[in-house]
Amino acid sequence: MTTRPVLREAIAACREVTVVYGDGDALVRALNAVSLEIRPHESVALLGRSGSGKTTLLHVLGGLVEPSAGSVEWHGVPLQSVDRAARGALRAKGIAYVFQGANLLPHFTAFENVAFAAQLIRNDAGSTLTASAALELVGLSAKLDHLPSELSGGEAQRVAIARALVQEPELLLCDEPTGHLDADTGERVLDLIDALQAELGFTLVVATHDADVAARYGRQLELADGTVVREEGAPQ
Image (cartoon, rainbow, N blue to C red):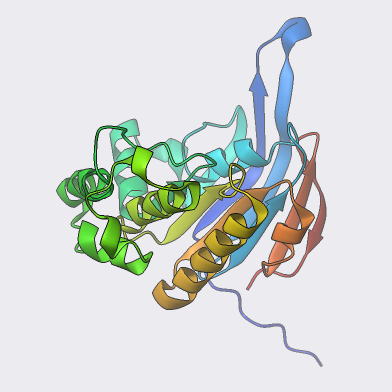
């Protein structure tokens, strides 16, 4: 008899999640009864074309979008069972984002952009990773006093990664993190994220339209029209 491995408790889970925008003829079903679990230390790719639902699913997992039906859980706790303030505190303690664009504050230096995020998180969740240490992790110790306009695209995205790392996240959600970068720079950014996951041990979910990017990760879920149409790799 084959014994199945015992799966670790899910960090985040969607249970029959549907997200609908608009109504009548303008109704858009961004997600349609999607269920999945994300477990500690996994690396998961959400693959799909624009409009497939992958970004909406990423935002649902992170508590930024509320489902129209179904439920979202963090460590087994349904988000609808806690108020908005408590939900924000939970997100601050354990979830960080890297978006397609770096979205840095233009008049703040690299250090100030990360330090500002560190201060917000420290007030809420007791983060101990300093802005300088986070920037050192992404190889930007020499660029602390540079403004975003003085950074390359890859460097700006590394600042955005440092801004996420300063939260000491349990779950890092990346939405097309190389979408604005050339192929070589994008590859280096992905290599950096992978190396940081190996070093720091966070769980990683990356939304991408690129099958080659998705193939880097241990589990791939392909979305189309708001539904998971293909999955490769088992939850760990």
